[in-house]
Each structure stands twice: as structure tokens, then as C-alpha cells.
Image 1 (cartoon, rainbow, N blue to C red):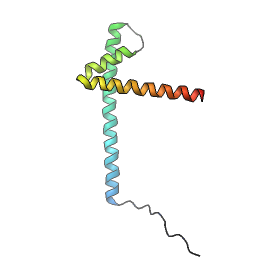
Image 2: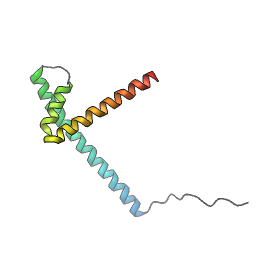
Image 3: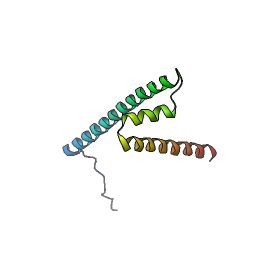
Image 4: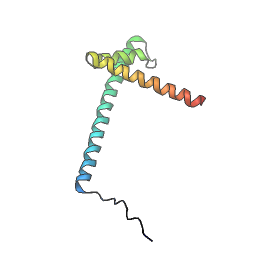
Amino acid sequence: MEQNSTVAMDVDTGADKEKKIKLKMNRSKKEKAMFNFNVYIYKEASKFNKIRMKNSPLVEPDISNAVIELFPGKMAYQALYSAFNSLIKSSVEEICDENG
């Protein structure tokens, strides 16, 4: 009887390890950058919230005004479009999961 000699070898070479480390570093940089933007948006939205009404929860106009102030020109509107589009998708998925 013949045995299949197709055994996957799990050997990491030095180059593979370096690539994995670089990928992890890039991911962490992106996550840190997103966190920084989140903090700035939250601070700007809080200022708009204080102007509008004291001690009320953050609402969509506060956040969108903060994004428009932080990002230049069309970039702000693209960011808002992406954010609201993802919110709509996630809420539709939640509704479908509840009913389905």
C-alpha cells in the first residue's frame, strides 16, 4: 500500500517571520491612526454638543459637524458617506438576523 506523501510542512523561514512582523507593525500603525482620529472626532463632537445642549448624548449632527471640520473638503464627505453606509448595512443585517 502506498501512502500519500503530501505532508504540509510548517517551516517558517527568516524571510517569512520578517514579513509577518512587518504586517503586524503596519496593522498596529493603522489601528493607532484610527484611534487618534476617533479621539479628535469625539473631542470636536463634544464641543458641538456643549454648544447645542449641555450634557446630552452625542447625536449625528454633532459627529458630522466634527468630521467636516477635521477633514479637508471632499475627504470629509467621503468619510461621512462611508460611515453612514456601514451603519445602514449593519442595521439592516441586524434586522434580517432578528426576523430570519
